[in-house]
Each structure stands twice: as C-alpha cells, then as structure tokens.
Amino acid sequence: MDVNYRMTQNSADLHGVFTLRRDVQTKPSQESIASAEDYAACRQIMQAASKNYSSASSYLPAEKQPHVEALYALMRVGDDRVDVSHSGYKSAQEAIDSWEQEYYQAFETGDSRHPVLRAYLDTAAKFSIPPEIMAPYFRAMRDDLTITRFYTFDDLMHYMDGSAIPVGRAMTHILGIGHPYTITEVLPGADSLSIAMQLSNFWRDIGEDWQLGRVYIPQEDMDYFRYSESDLAAQRINYNFIELMEFEFERTEMHYHTASASVRKLASGRVAVMSALEIYRAILIDIRANRYNVFTRRAGTGRLKKLKLAAKAYLQFR
Image 1: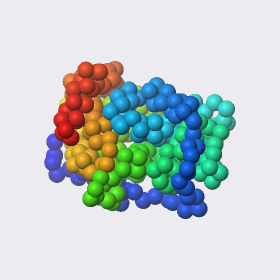
Image 2 (image 1 turned 30 degrees about the vertical axis):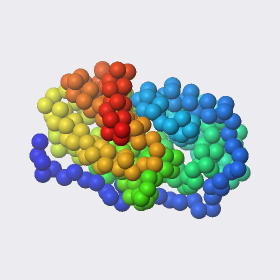
Image 3 (image 1 turned 120 degrees about the vertical axis):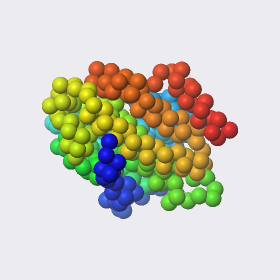
Image 4 (image 1 turned 180 degrees about the vertical axis):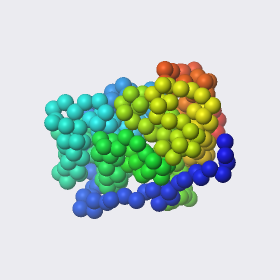
C-alpha cells in the first residue's frame, strides 16, 4: 500500500456544517409528552433492526435506554421509507418529505400522531436537543434517492454529516457531558464514533449495497487500487480488493481512535458507548476472519464475543 496516498478528510464537514431551522425551538416539558407504549414501539423497532446497537444500548443506565431507543427509531423510520417501503405514499421522496414535515410539526405543536415522534419529542424536550440537529439527516435521506456513488472520501463525509453525525450529537445530549468538559470538547469524538460505526457498516455491507445499486467505497480509492465495479459485480476477492479494504479499515480505525479518547468525557453511559465502539470495531476483525468475503458472508459478532467486549469496556471505566 502506498502510504503517500492522500487520506482526505474535510474538517468542516466532520464538525458539521448544518442548515439550521431557528424558527423552531425545543421547550422543556413539565410532564411526559410520550406514553410507555410510545417508547415500547421504539424499542421494538430498534431490536428488530440492529442486534449490535441493541446489545450495546443494554448497558446504558436504565433511565437513558428509552431515549436512545427513541433516537434510533426516529432515524430508522426515515431510513426504511427510503430503503424498504414507502407504502401509502406515491414515492420514497414523498415518504421522506412527509416524515420531515411530521417531525417539524411535532416540535411546532408539541405533539404528534406518530408514537416514534412523540417519544423523540419527549426525549428532545428532556435533554434540550435542538430540532435543527436532524436537518442534515433529512438531507442525507433525500440524497439516498439519487446519489449511489461517491467519488471522493470528502463526498462520503458530506453524506455522513447527515446519515451518521446527528446520531452521535443527539446521543451526547442524552448522555450528558462530564465535568469539567464542554460539549465543544466532546462533539469531535462523538462525530468520529458515528463516522467509524457507519464506515464499518459500509464495509460489511458492500455486497448487499451492490445488489441495491449502491457503492459506498469512494471511486477514487477504487481507481487507485485498480478495483473496478466489474470486479464488484463478479464478487472478486483479490490482492487489489484486500489492499483497498485495508486502506479503508485504516481510515476507519483513525476515527475509532479519536472516539475512544473522548468516551470518558461523557457524564453517563460510558460503558455502553465503549461497548458499541468495540462491537462495531469487531466488524473489521470479522471481515478479515472471513477472508474479506463481504459478498456471501456477513461479518458480525456473536453473543459471547459481545459479552467479552462489554466486559473489556467495563474494565476501562471500573
């Protein structure tokens, strides 16, 4: 691998260049906006969609778990309207537009007919999460409808500004900042963890995404390592592909390293966040164990391995 190959990173994108909606404000509520059933619906969505996320979140303080589930469900509903089904709408575009409209309407009225939005609205009120934090998320979901390739890593970073970073930033509000740190000091680590986790998913899902017509490997990287889309179609695992994957893994590991240094700055949930970091990081290890077969084998972490990684995380903060 040529170590002189440029590892691009747009720092402005990393720390978020968001289009803010300042006309909507989050107002703390004296009573719960959502019911226990609303939060239970969010929990079911998360458990059905992500074993890794569900496993890591189980180590959160009990009072934080429902709010993290609400955050996950909010984004999963939008993702599914783009990737799974837009039943009831004329198009996926109309489906995601409707979800955005319902989202902002919930903040404007203080209520919603959708259980996930009620749960997230209640969470946002309790932890002062500004509504505009999700503006890039809705932009990224619309990008998913038309953008299927990313020429540079900067282009991919811009996409993750919406698809990944809002999760980490909202999580930071929910878990809180430990003394004597400030949110400005913690957010870069939260951003890096969101990026690293999504990159791990991208590399795990290369074969699945190809079947959906999407390629998240930057085109300039594929060109540099002389690995083509014809190779992807043929599910070719050769020296070029392995070198390409190792280059992307190294880039991903840089973000995990930055994130791990910031976890102890959180006020709560440190074990859960570090467990998530280790569980998603293990995806890279499992891809190697599968001999880089991301086409017919899905990298993952078994229950016993997850318990060991959680124990490792616990020992770091004992």
